Amino acid sequence: MTATRPIRTGFVLHTMNVAGAEKLVVEIIERLRGRIQPTIFCLDGIGALGEALMADGVPVLALGRRPGRDLRVAWRLARELRARHIEVVHAHQYTPFFYAALARMLGGPRIVFTEHGRHDPDIVSPARRLANRLALARCAAVTTAVSHFSARGLAQNDGFSSDRIRLVANGIDLARYTGGDRDRIRRRLGLEPSRRYIVNVARFHPVKNQEGLLHAFREVTAVAPDVDLLLVGDGPRRARCEELTRDLGIAHRVRFLGVRNDVPDVLQAVDLFVLSSTTEAASLTLLEALASSVPVVVTDVGGNPEIVRHGVEGLLAARGDSHALAIAMLQVLGDPEKARAMALAGRLRAATVYRLDQTIDGYYSTFLELAGHHAA
Image (cartoon, rainbow, N blue to C red; front, top):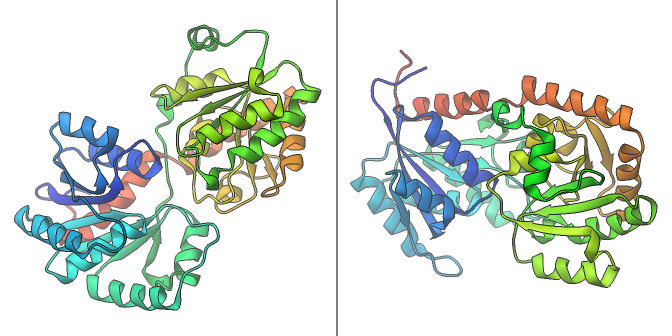
């Protein structure tokens, strides 16, 4: 489907740092080049991805939100949306939707609200539930969820009308996660050919529970002396995790790689991908691991069991149970034949169910609908 001219599309986010929702926005802008005319509005700061987009000619504005509810942001956003003749706003996460909804009431355009994840614990006040129903009705908005788990949360917890919620599953570009020379990649990353590697790719945040993973990995080190752990990412809990590796006596077996722009290479160099999150919606890094033909061990939370079928693409472990996570990792590492079968099944699942072109088509058709364009 195409529009008669580019749709003037505004994206509202907290910031454009390296994270799942922000990476998705970059993909949407790149793949809909010529079909949308994008402008990004950041509540809290531009971020590294925002700086890169600005260098590529995409307007990125920082709205300078103050702590708490800052109603000035809604006025600024509404003013900018009108001045730039934005036709559709795509708000990512709840707080950006809140300000986009206020801007809509001040004369802004229709909204697509995408919920990427859920809080832990997932508690929503009655007042917020009522406000959500009123906002959706007033804003001519469409709510999209990246997984059935997120869709249920939006309906049951947030109070959005279930008949206005659409599933647009996350997807990835498979071509980026195949064909690498594993030995060459390992040499470049400084990985030893005689050792096996587990990787976790996630921001260091309590919901990602890297502390629980480290406790589980300590059990792994006692049984598998040739296995090391790679942690990719950054965030507020990184320093605590670095301290914990020393407390647990495993600092020599854990490497903190920071934020990387070569995650596809890292994934092709490892033997197992692990997520220890307390909640997830539809992790992009999990999809990337599947596309990279890496067996996975993930916690049995949120959208993870929608993506990973236990014993097929990987193993599921109980949330918050470090021992169960350790046992699952050792089961995969101890059965190379089964691990290879899981890796192949994961690649097939990514290729058939979680393709990026399907994701982009889902969002573009919604932009067309709300902008009032007709398919050619």
